[in-house]
Amino acid sequence: MSAAMDAMLRVSETLKSFRETRLSALRPPSEFFDHHRLSRPADMNQATSRISYNTRYFSGNYGLVVASLGIYALITNLRLVFALLFLVGGFAAINRFAPEPMQVGEHVVTQKSLYTALFVIGIPLLWFASPLGTIFWIVGASGILIVGHASLMEPGIESEYAQVQDSV
Image 1 (cartoon, rainbow, N blue to C red):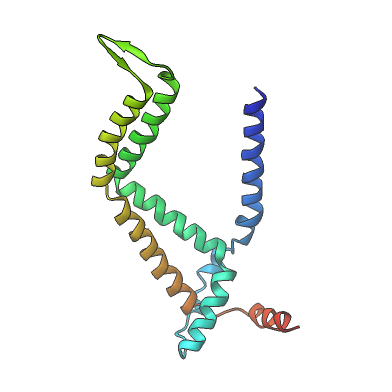
Image 2 (cartoon, rainbow, N blue to C red):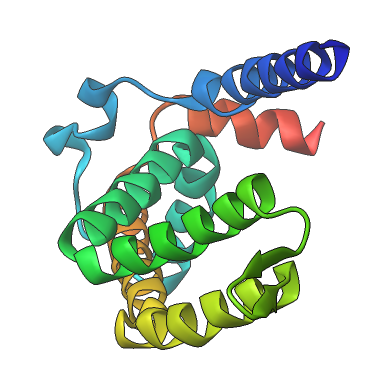
């Protein structure tokens, strides 16, 4: 019982620290989608400085963009969801319902043989679901969106004060 309470406390502390670090960095949508601050950078140096500043300034929002793309990728790739649920659910079921060897007819079924069967079925399912393609799609799409937004968004007035504080 105390192990469950310890686990719940750890999860609670992890969520609290996540909320304090990442969610506090979220900028309001009116600032993130401010079309009045969009402009084409004059040269590569300006684009690089904008990307450097905006990736730090909008880091929480960009994390939300990556998470949204990941959720979208899972919704649109149901084979991947099925394969992951099959593997994770099979692993959990084997741990819960078959901790010791069982006699089935003339055969003794062990955890090792159940895991082998799970992976013989689950790995091809996962292969056909193309998880690497999904990961590369998420990385590519989020990279294009984040670099595009960061390079086109003009830094606000506060960026000038950040440069002064860095040099002091």
